[in-house]
Amino acid sequence: MNNRTPRRAGPAERLRAVGLRVTAPRVATLDWLAVHPHATADQVADGVRERLGSVSTQAIYDVLHACTQTGLLRRIEPAGHPARFETRTADNHHHLVCRVCGRTEDVDCVVGVAPCLDPSDASGFAVDEAEVVFWGYCPDCAGRRAAERVET
Image (cartoon, rainbow, N blue to C red):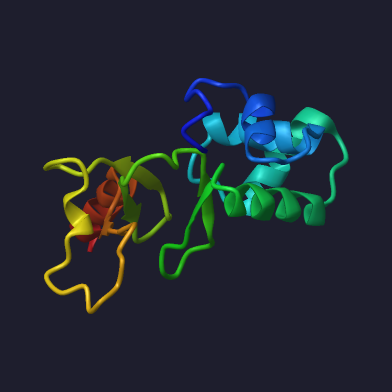
């Protein structure tokens, strides 16, 4: 999303602002991801199909790619889990990922505006984004693990 597009703009306005045509699959994808962040492509496809009916899987992949390329969506790829997509793109937030089920939650930088953008040695790179993933167990999976330990 660019600086000219208001943060609360609807999907159609956001698509136009980045030069993309407004189509039903694009609007439905952005709408669905706004309510279901960190969804996989398959989850997005199922959600969009519930809203629009028949939409090809390839069409969903094309929408996700176009929206990611223009900055409307962010693609995250936690190791060992399928890629996930979110509409929160205008900041340098990070993620908590469950090792078992893949549940993903946003976590803001704790100190300053973007403290993770200052590596100890940038090796000449012009750093513009940092990706930090915190790994662990979501409350549900942690509870199941604890129950399994008690039973054994």
